[in-house]
Length: 352
Image 1 (cartoon, rainbow, N blue to C red):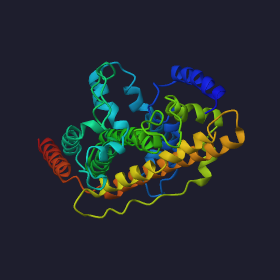
Image 2 (image 1 turned 135 degrees about the horizontal axis):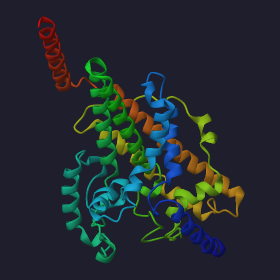
Image 3 (image 1 turned 180 degrees about the horizontal axis):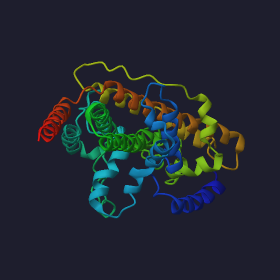
Image 4 (image 1 turned 180 degrees about the vertical axis):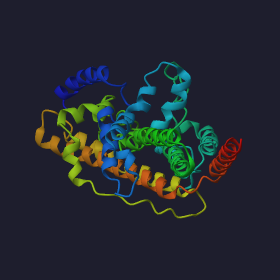
């Protein structure tokens, strides 16, 4: 980055951070919103139509920013719980001696393995500054793929009980079940969108760290600039990306030794990690600089493709959850018992 750009951009980032959310969060609200909207546009015709009704679609788009709003609080317990769900410092997996291809699908199994691995390879990790670790998250690599897989389970459950309520529930129960689905779809979209931002899948999230033979930028504002500043500067719009949107297909889930959904989610994360060095290469050649519109067009296309990738993947996850949602046998039994009692009570009232 040249001297004039390095002086100008931090000032712009400060302004943008006052207008939106704290820096280094993933796409700013506008980017996350576009990911959710791309996902909605990518759904096939047989997906439940209630999610595309104007009010529902707007709520799903709005909820794309919800997990970042939680991070605006100063309450440390929610920061401790929520913040690591937005990223995965992919390189730390191997730094801890773990095999990325054999990670457990259950969050706390991974926590146990990583803690032991980190303790055994402590010299490989940067020293944690307690003054900058009030929320006690610096020791962890992030839990983004686990968060996405867990949200998939919530959405699948939501579709399962909606189907039972549509058969045997009240109008209010059906409406509430649909509202729950809309909420899960919207908030989980944030994390899938985080996964499409390459700087969320690497230790190099705020400028290149460690050995730097290619002389990539070490600018700590790079992440925040990509998240929102460049999107605004380059004029990235949903309407420009929609012509590339096509209906997605559900994932083919192959049963094996692990969880097939987590495996697919992790494939997505690994695919996005492949774009870490390319984004730094583009920065080095000036593709994200406001004063270079020709090269900036190349940067714009790169970011648009990342947003499209996040939207397509999100739609695939939504669709897979819907298709895989089986019967909620427990709820069905409860509803059938309630219906029988109501019928019996009505009969007794009529007989009396």
